[in-house]
Image (cartoon, rainbow, N blue to C red; front, side, top):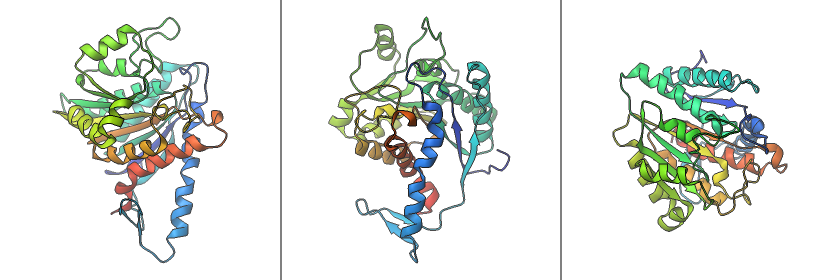
Length: 309
């Protein structure tokens, strides 16, 4: 952490899946995503023999070498599998330090609960910068994660993340956007909260009808209006199970892998101050497809920042 500089991209793993229910494995997500990114390094090394610029054959986008020296892997934040609150405080402190040092956190989950303490750390850092910050939130997921209280987990588990974020001082539902709901049933209280709070959601049907670029443009406008920064969280289960089987929740009717990469490209327009990608569970996908898709999406998002184009 102490080596982070202003403008760095700070990658950190959060290998924690205590609250994700019966299909665990997301604690192996940070390692899986890192391993899934190695193909990109090998590919660039192989292609960059004497060349200083590579071109995306579809978009015409240029990637220049060498990459900017701003990508820092800070390792994994400390977790305590049997202690949710102790783990939460470690996550808060880690993200707070990254943002306070002027870095851009890229967090690798872990189950989706880890987003809540990460957002708390993000808010803490902003409160040091400004007395009354206003922050936006974009939740990309096939689920709403708006549970309030459950008999098993109480108020803090992977299905309550967005509800807890909505209660923080610096966040207002009017600046919260959900993208990717794929048709699963939700309880009346969650639906009523979404409909009555002033928040906005774009389902998979909306993404297909409007196009991903338009959905992201509308999401950015809403989430960033009057805000100092935006936190973006991505659950890999927004992708249909056929394309990303390595995750704890089965989802049918989600977006395709191609749409996911389009989405990651479009998210570059978000005035984001932090981003996480969660719920990748490598043990549930021996092929490594899900880990590699997650890594490729993150690379697509970060490429303009690191390539110097």
